[in-house]
Length: 172
Image (cartoon, rainbow, N blue to C red; front, side, top):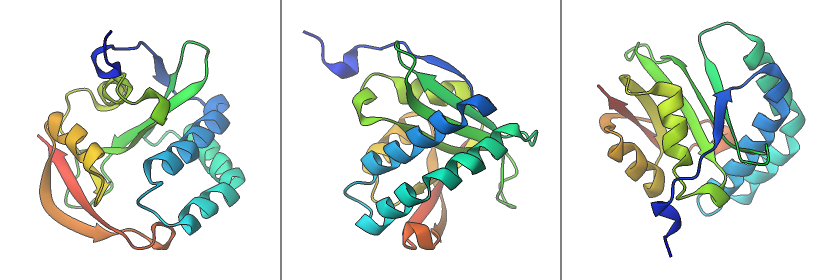
């Protein structure tokens, strides 16, 4: 019997469209809950549940803009959204290169290679940077395995994220 991490499940990954806004947003919020269940306080999760209609509207608007930011959606064999990613021009003044805004996958897909497939689709082997929340060792290991290293830049998240510390990683 093979372990989940030794089997590579195929998912359909494509550029997200305006029609995907609701599935994208719902997957994003569900993955936030799963990813940060033991890191963030209950108020964080309550905020995202209450704000879901606005998140859907903002995602719809983001997917309709032509600003160089691309959203990606991963579908399982039944056509259900199970992962998302977003990438585009860098937003940090000192890092004008490409930015990976986020990758989130549902916990049910962990170990199947979906995160890697989303990373490959969203930034390929380009130089890029990203921000990662402190105390998220699973994500940090994933990015290190993909050539990212901390660049020494740190910041605090905004109030919704309870001003938690984060750090920047880059890959050349």
